[in-house]
Image (cartoon, rainbow, N blue to C red; front, side, top):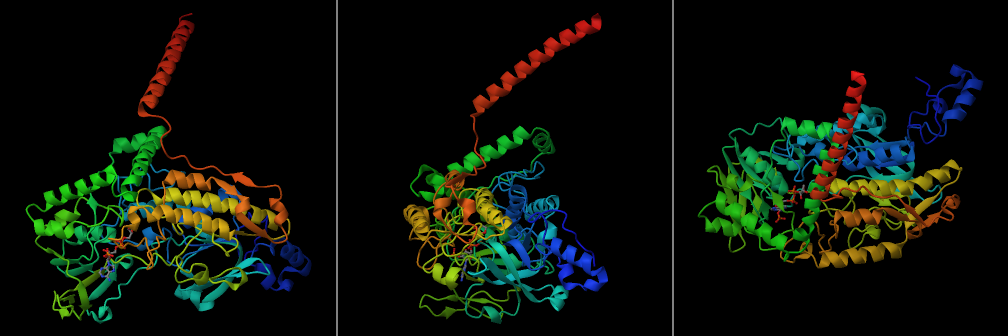
Length: 609
Ligand code: NA7
């Protein structure tokens, strides 16, 4: 067994295996054993980490990279339920899967990729990008795959988190099926779209054919010539249906509520453009900034149903629908939403309506009453089951995720034994969506009220990672001094913040009573969406106000005299107009040209002499 000598100070040493504490001293010689034990005991321990991150998706990776870059902390563990990195891009690999935000913007600001092959690349290309990031930042050594968190408990005395993890990889589970990790800080990076929502339709379990949830796609199943039922018509279904319709014998789409659908305008990125993005980075930055500007301007459209932009969405949708499905007013009626654009996620697609025009695709809008051994019965007008379509080979559940129970099914207990269920009674809430009342030394990414209907979620995640890392810094300082520090947000600060957010949301399209969405809980509280623009959110998180937090422990002195820390934000929007930019580039070119011309005359002169 290799002995890892700690050549770097804590917390720069990654979590390892506590070799010396468990090995036989006689094998090494007692004096060496004592010295090595002293050197390594503090930080080389399989079940002790400074920070524990749940999830190796975009948020978990971003937090880990910031831990390394901003806090020089390598003493962390990432536990990941699945077998690979990428989070949602690992889980969702159904046919047609891609992002509905341009990847130039749906990517880390600090790792802009010039090589995207399309404006909206597919899942495999996005996953590839994330795998490359994991490699580049050497993240694999921190990740424990096939490991899920079942329970996390704050220890008031030790001022540490005790997190119970379960190992599902068969080989690893043979020797360590379950264990507890102790950490100073606990970060949830599990996201909002993590746990599939299996619909509670009577008879679902009796279906004899194949059943797949969109986020659990079985690629070993051959779709060719199959008769398929798709339940759901959200963003996911709108991507799957056009793909599988190409080879299926027949598809019936079960729509409960219509969606606003606007054109996507996807296109390949030419090799010339890619080369320019690679070798002239300002062009890449500019392209991203312009996409940011456009997406930010979309905010009005999703939040205010009466805004001119919302009117445009209605027009684009109708135009697209009428063009793809000409002279079918009955179908138009079924496909036109009766709620404001933005209340549910606006779908961007060029091929959904044309797919509904195919002979092998049927749209069913009557409600489902039950699922039988091989079919789906409908609710008759008298409310009784009426026979529906049968002989399905495959049932696709494009029914979304359990979104409002953040961190489900993890059992979390905070300070003074308070459970997350009690803390979040009435709906999940957090301070800036990141820190939670009664959960000390806890941070979450893509938490309550941080989802967007109009822009790239990665912009929010980066701000959260930066903010959480700023909160982790004094916890590390205290431990460096041999002390401990516990930070939790003040309840009145959290409440005031959330009241403000809810006030705006309650007057927005998200609150339109004519629609249900995954943004709201059963009581109608909008638990998932942010109320403002990305820039507003980034500005909120650009400063840590230490007076917002209750500090406890033996190491509170590290915060003495500190009231605010300015951590800044990633400025994504354009800073100059195109005219100013063109003028500056032109001026720079003239100056450079003049300089070169003068020097070449001078050099020529030198040569002539
Ligand atoms: P969504 O947007 O939550 O869509 C789920 C769809 O499934 C939606 O059409 C639902 O109808 C439908 N659904 C859910 N349960 C049922 C039952 N019981 N019966 C019939 N139909 C049902 O999930 P997606 O996966 O499409 O997208 C999630 C996000 O992923 C998306 O916003 C992007 O950000 C990426 P409903 O509209 O509720 O009537």
